[in-house]
Length: 361
Image (cartoon, one colour):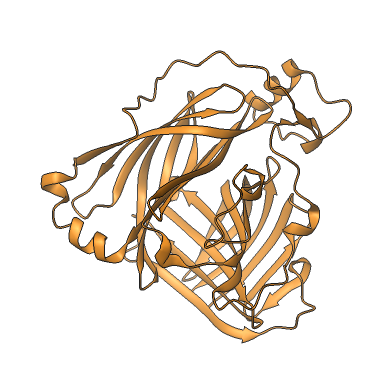
């Protein structure tokens, strides 16, 4: 095992800082729930109305849940990722639909974990779709995606040869858009992207074996330019429990480190201001655990412990390697699941992993 520490040593039992009142809060309703009622509902895992959530994250227009008009730039595309973990079944996976600026659309699914002898991957190759087709009724080959109320629900169906999925997603909080950050979204990575957590219910069938699904899901949606090779490294982290959700995306490009993300707990959503983390590698430089301490704009400190139970390597582009980890998480005593993806420049990764046992502590 090799332990690495980012920014500063972090301990999962970090004491909470006293919360500070924000100078300005964005509420989704004129008459929200009381603070005590919000916190009680959140702790009990009761779904909260978006209108009752207090947030310092600006509201995103409904239209951005749907398909966008893309630029003519050669790397322009729109994609969504639906990530889910089933640790009790030894399974994890993701469903990934996309469309490019030429109107070519495809989708892929990948399942992996200790209950499978090897990853199961299926893909529907790109086919032309009309400009008029929206995500409210997106039917491309064996994939169907139908948005419900914007930013709140999605119905998904994937009908492959080995894998069939029929499921419904319900969001637990409003989306976080990178454009809401004061420095916006890095233009080489997207015009904008959103991150959101929620609950997934339905069925997953693998080679004829049917599994009932009732678990947490992490959802992202991005549109615009995607130049994978400009990422020197990044950490894409998600953790979800019945009453809390944490996301951060720390990107290192052009010698700069950028941070985006949020904490949702106690009925309040707040943008992340800083993160500290402590992680452990295996001998292939694939992370096995990551403990995080996040401080948000509301002055709250949130500690997350996460352990990887399923790993997968995804060479999404010749320039990079994505090391995927589906996780079992704990946020302030409450267990759940999540996802952590490390992106590496391929040349660096292939070289560094040969030395991780000796130097990567």
